[in-house]
Image (cartoon, rainbow, N blue to C red; front, side, top):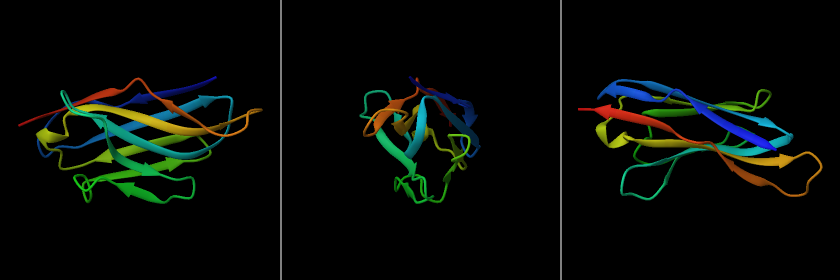
Length: 121
């Protein structure tokens, strides 16, 4: 089995910073892309940022220049550093890992339980 666990959410004032962390563990052979997604109340889940095992990154237009995604392939972790937070960044942030498992063909998508980020105005 594979577990994905996030940490680091919380309440912050507009203009502040937060750092989210995510760790994948279990029967992992390797991880392709890892990423962060968010879902605000009444809205669909949206991509925030993703990063490949080679370090290629992709960001939503709304967070470019404010958020930075990074990963440690050896530790199977991914972080999201968030600066200049806005009230519209308020959402549940979830980590996703595309995992190649030991002894199984193909790759599987795993999600964490999510962590709340609330930005007050």
